[in-house]
Image 1 (tube, rainbow, N blue to C red):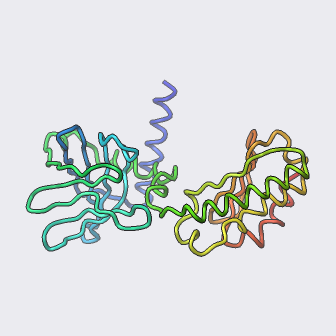
Image 2: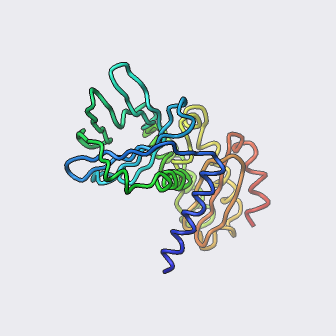
Length: 255
C-alpha cells in the first residue's frame, strides 16, 4: 500500500514536470528483440526538432530501464537515434533499409523489429515520467557524463590527506566522498574540484565538535552553496566559486 502510494506520488510529480517543461509526445513506437529486449521510442514536439526519448528494457545490462533523451538523425542512408554517453555521441538505435539494430553500452548489438501489439499497450507518458525521475535522481547524468578516472583518483587522494589531518586534530575518522554524478563534464574539465570541496574538510577540522556522530563528509556540485546535516553525514553543495566563498558560508553552519 505504502509503496503504491509512493509510486503514485512520484508519477504525479513527474507528470507535472512534463507539463512544466512542455515535453509533449507526438508518437510512440516499440521495437522488440528476439530475446525479450524492447526499446520504446517517444517522438517529442515539435517534430522538426527531431528529439526523442528512448527507454530500454529487458537488455540484461545496467542500462535496463534507462529512459534517455536523444536525437533522431537522418544519415541519408537511414535514421540514427543518438544519445549522449560517456561524454560523446552514442548511436543507441540505428535504422537501415527497414532493419533496426540496437547498440546498448556493454552488450553485443542486437536486431529489433517494430511491434504494433507492444506499441498499443505502451504508454508515452510512462516513458517521459521515467526520464524525468531518472534525471532528478542523477541516473541520466551518470550515463551521459564522461569518465574522469585520473582526476577522480587525484581528488580522492587529496581528500584522504585532508581526512588524515582531520583525524589527527579531532580524533574522529569520517570518510570523504564526492557525489561524482553532480560534477558534469564542463565542471570536471575547468574546475579544481578539490579546491571547491576543500572548505568542508578545512572548516570541519576547525570545528571538531560539529563532527560528533558524523561518519561521512560528502561534497556535491550545484547552482548555489548549500549545507545539510544528516544523521551521520555532513553534505556540502559547492559551486564554481566554492573555494573562495565556501569557508565563510560554512563558518555559520558548522556549529
